[in-house]
Length: 193
Image (cartoon, rainbow, N blue to C red):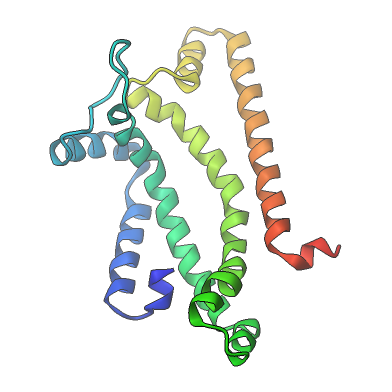
């Protein structure tokens, strides 16, 4: 939103440069590179693995950052474009003509319009995050379903592989349903149908 509201200014250029860098980083090298860089930069982040006697958020900083960086980058670019388009729409011009405060125009009128493409992107994006967790759990030595899936595939345990696929399929369908319901709540035109 900041990039859209300050279009063609320093904040816009900085945010979009970071977003493009986040999109352009190669996915396979992202985990080890983040681990190497952030381990030195952030003393609180652990390299990987969970220990039974010590559990904390510091073990999740690097995996969460590695999984979320490309999604954040794409969402920020998508949000900027849709917010610029929403701010130029007739509905926003009408809200401003009524004399509404700019903060109310942005938060109550422009933001719901701008969120529609984000919500449409959210379902498939979260499915991609779940698929990426397979690799992240292996790279950062985290226990999880993704790591069990990889081990089961290597050991040819087809029953466990099918069970994990069913769980992930159910979660993906549930996330897409949640995205569709959120879209219906944000867009009053879809409720009329």
